[in-house]
Length: 300
View 1 (cartoon, rainbow, N blue to C red):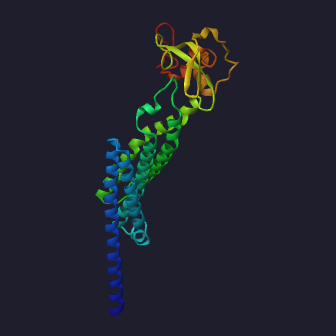
View 2: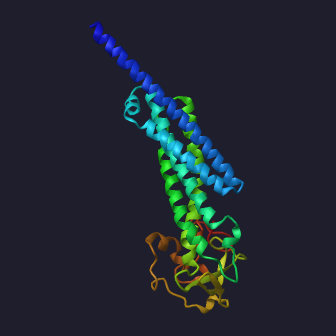
View 3: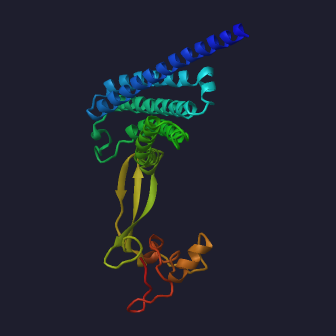
């Protein structure tokens, strides 16, 4: 019995020592990775993109090491224990999310090194908007968006029962990642859609409506004139404007509404067939039965 108890004690001690060593390694890698992320961010803000690439790459290595250590069999087993388990799981999620953030920083910095950060690269030149830099940014921006989406998913909610420092780090990193996503989403959509809109694949024609804000209607006023806008290879040309009264007027039965709700809300105004009312969907009816002064309906 004594031999058995002694052996068990030795095993538990050895496991405790190995676990402690692994935890120390995880924390050291997390600290180094965070420092690398901060160096990379500072370098980007000061325009030192090559330094940023190096810093983000080093941070990604450190954070990948932290995630690998925290995902090992021993620490995964310890993660099932009460008290220490939630904190360890939280640290593992932080390491995995931060690894994605570092990868995103590296990818964007490397792309900007290739393309350049001067806004002049996408400014109009010779009467045309350069399309190649926009197309070059589309793929790396989409990859960056994917990395940050995965990071945000890992940081959705800290494990219940984790210690306060882990929860604070979890929430802080998650807040920073989520604050970037709307701007990144807009930039990604911009680089993906604008080249085609500007005629990268050949000439495209658009109906351009000129709204008059003198009369409140829709979001910006009534559409009183129109022109045909043509884009081709980044060049934009606009034909002569003409009054919308010269366009054909369609009856309610000629063009069916896109859905029943549209017809119920805007059918009485010929919104789908009369160009002056075509932008009524930009407004919201406050009270369908409320009559404003002069007999018109009240909209907002």
